Amino acid sequence: MRTRSQRWPLWALAVACVLALAFGLTQYKEARSARTRMQAAQQRALFNLVTHVENLEASLAKARASSSVGQQVNFLTAGWLNCQAARSDLSLAGADGVDLSGPRRFVATVGDFALVLSQKLARGETVTPDEWAELARLEDGVKELSGVLAKTAQASVTGPRPARSALLEMAASFTRGSSRAADSLNHGFSEIDQITQSIPAPVYDGPFSEKNLEAQALAQPGPLISDERAKQIALSFLTPGESFQSVSVGTVEGAIPSYVVTAKRQDGSEVATTVAKQGGAVVMATDSAPRGAGAIGMEEARNKAMEFLKSKGFQSLEETGWRKRGANANRVVFAYVPHTEVSAEGGNLKVCLYPDTVKVEVSLDTGAIVSFDQMNYLITHGHPGRVLRAPIISAAEARSVLKPELQVETAEPRLCVIPILPTTEVMAWEFRVRSGNDTYLVYINAMTGKEQVVLQLIEDESGAMSV
Image 1 (cartoon, rainbow, N blue to C red):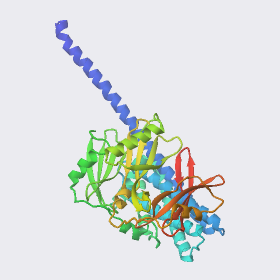
Image 2 (image 1 turned 180 degrees about the horizontal axis):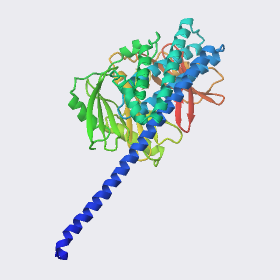
Image 3 (image 1 turned 90 degrees about the vertical axis):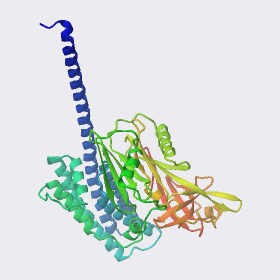
Image 4 (image 1 turned 180 degrees about the vertical axis):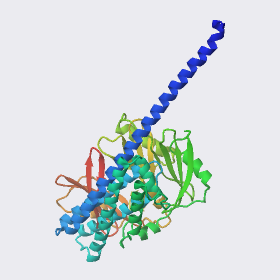
């Protein structure tokens, strides 16, 4: 018979086993809860996408049916706003390294074309019959896409797999042929791929026209890097020092040929980082880890974003705005632009470079950086083709162009470079003005003195957006 002293190691081992089992069960429950929250977010993104595409279809149809220029402008602008929202849904859906670039590009093209027509009408120009025909053709594509999306969303609920799996199938359909055509979800996403690939792009001059997409490239390309080097850069960027269950490296072509490094955690969440093949700059990065309720304020989030930018070598960026994905969202996106100076009579003038936008998204629960995007910055900043000259039109001369009834809110206008196309930009004086209860940003060309662009500034508890 064993003595008490002989039995105590067995008791200790038993207690250790019980504690290990309890810890394992706790970890399993936490991982399962995280997966559930992530799947719920994917589900919301998919159904929001369906709603915004349906609204886009309705806006385009109303714009074509309306005989009032004012109504046409409103409907076309509404179409563009729905495209922006749909692109946001696709970005959220693709936060785990899912490549949804195909449908995102199609939606962006439709919205861009609608905005080009809206601005044309707002300038008093006439939309040609061919342009209306192009819009009708795109509307047919949106209508077909809307129907397939609705079926796919329904399949994600009634089928055996959650929305996350459905979105992965959608992404896969853009890179390979379907080997399981009988699967309802895969069949639906294959239809989406066929729709977006079969609709020719409209012939026009806009940021997402094929001509200008092909013209985009790195402003300052560096030497080619290996996939192993891209992996090192990615893992040290957004969450340095973190260990992952698995890490994979893929490639993506486009404006900036890149490696896509996807680091997966045990709970199923992922950190996806796109690294330029030339030079190794991080183009964008996203962390899909589930987030809790907001616990920090806007000012602290703003400081976190700026600290992150400084740690990555950005020293002279100026915040131009912020936006949440809804008033009660637990994340906020801050937009920043750099500035430079031009020589002029009386001294140097500060110039804000709006095309060179950098975006940082901060989680409001912990202050963690959950996404970063500097694609525009890499394409335009320091480009050898950019030559900035002193403005010919003074600030006072530009101010005289404004309508007398407008109330100018800025004491001094801002001199800035604004994008007209990805390959075309102009220097302009920016005036913030009010007309009644509405606020606008009016841009007067600093070289010609003509009104270049007018944007309405919409500000609410979710942030500010110009349209």
